[in-house]
Image 1 (cartoon, one colour):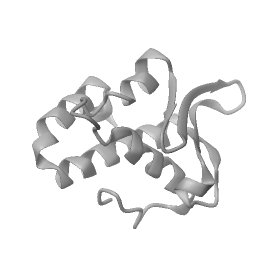
Image 2 (cartoon, helix red, strand yellow):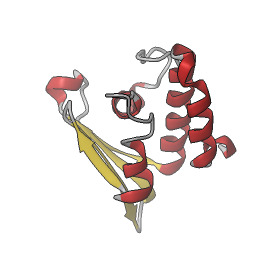
Image 3 (cartoon, rainbow, N blue to C red):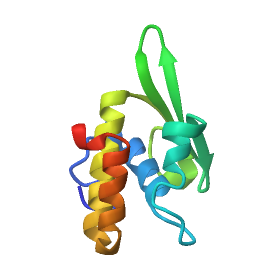
Image 4 (cartoon, rainbow, N blue to C red):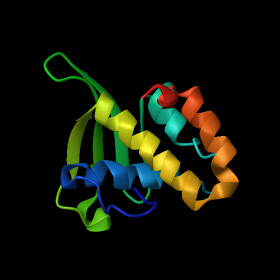
Length: 123
C-alpha cells in the first residue's frame, strides 16, 4: 500500500482504508494517534469530518469487529457502511500507519511507537 492510494487494496476494504487515512493523518500538529486512540481505547468509537465514523462492535454471531461508515458523497465509494472483523481492521491499520511512515519520514519514530503501543507489531 502507498499512502493516499487504494491501489492493490481489495475493493471490499476500500472503505476501511480510506477512513483510516482520514483518521491517521495528523492535523494541527496533533499526535498521529490523536483520533485513533479514541477508537481503540477511550470511547471505542469516534467520527469526524469529512463525514466518517469508526465504532467497535461486539456481536454474538459476528464476533468482535469495527463498524466503519463514510458519507458516500464525500468518499466517492459504493459502500457507505461495512463491518470488518478485528483481524482485518488491525492489519489495515498497521499497513496504513506504515504507508504514512514511508510517505512522511519525519513521523517514522512516532508511528513506530504507536505500532508498539497498540500491539500492532504482533500482527
